Amino acid sequence: MLLPVSQVASLVNALKFNWLDEVYLNEIPNEALDNTDTTVMLLQETDSSPAYHANSTFKGLAMGVEIQIFYKVDLANDFNPLEAEVALMKILKASGWLIVSNQHHTIDPDTNQLTKTIYVTKNEMI
Image 1 (tube, helix red, strand yellow):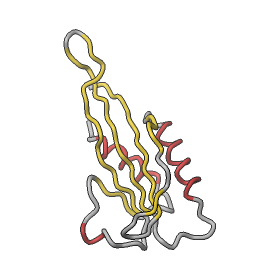
Image 2 (cartoon, rainbow, N blue to C red; image 1 turned 120 degrees about the horizontal axis):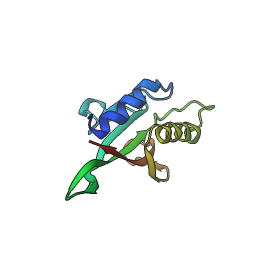
Image 3 (cartoon, helix red, strand yellow; image 1 turned 120 degrees about the vertical axis):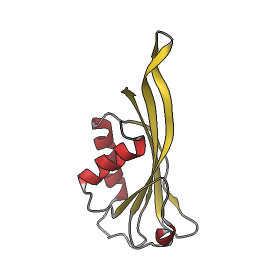
């Protein structure tokens, strides 16, 4: 079984969103931290707890992933981040992920990038 962040990364990378330039797992590399010319997604694990308890044991895992999107500073005028996020969430839901929280948009104080954070979970049998 793949790590939760790897599962979400595989799904997102397979979709080849034209608005997304890079997907990072666990951290954004230092050399990319100040790059505001690309839209990046950072995936971090939020949960990997035992689930499906029965007969004094567990038979699955409750997996959680935090999805942070950092949009490039100069977005195209015809690009709607909300539409992109809704499409992403629909695909995640269709793939068995539950959207737990869809946080409001914020502006990163260091880079002035529009950001979005989404939390998803999924229970999987082992």
